[in-house]
Length: 329
Image 1 (cartoon, rainbow, N blue to C red):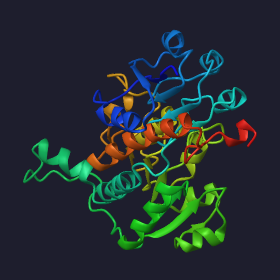
Image 2: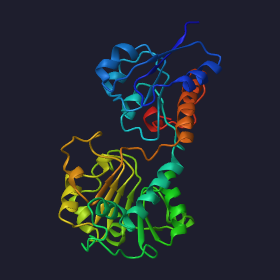
Image 3: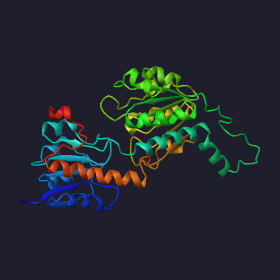
Image 4: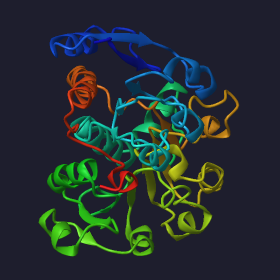
């Protein structure tokens, strides 16, 4: 029997010894091919006869998918699958698998850290000291802040990560509001979250934290109209995907102080251009899409992504298939 061909389209970590070990330990004869491109046109000649794809950020579009002759699974390094055309994969009979429990602790920890940083104005105080403000008599911008206890945290998207944020935030004395059209009020109540409309959440929250997937329903979810509903002293946290927020509208709201501040782990364009106007603002914290990172999380991700491939090649269903509807299952 010829070897199965598994193609890694792109990656952040060049060490694939863990993935190779999972594939080897399956007992299957597997030829692991490594690419490093997000361009589907560059991938097509290599992946057309692949039995499985492992994808990080590469664009897996309809054109590429329709060239696949024997692919049994597309396995994503991560939770989000917005870079894969799920409908096309389903129509072509290819399951798309992810790692749904990846980085829950890390992203929820980072969210709570952002709440503290924004609440205690660390983004201001650090710059103040670096500019010689300590002892200068100059007033500190945005200071003093209101006490965090008793403020309102609004969580948009109560999936695994949003729920973890709610559980952790319950210990810091904030009131919790949630918006998720797929959650029932009873399910929200178990998290001590009051389920409200998006408009109600935006009007009431002191911190709005985004944790929804990127899809047709959520692309551009937060734009000028939504930002206009927020309090002048409110802060926006985006831990979802950059395009969930209309970035030009966010810049306008921050630059004109219609909202207080923002903390962003994701941007519309990653990496941003050096002249991106958001980078010039002093009321925004930006991290380079790293909130998911920890030693343990990365090891789990690499192992579980490879295991999805092994399961599919062995004729089993990977534990998390995200395009069941498109597959007709």
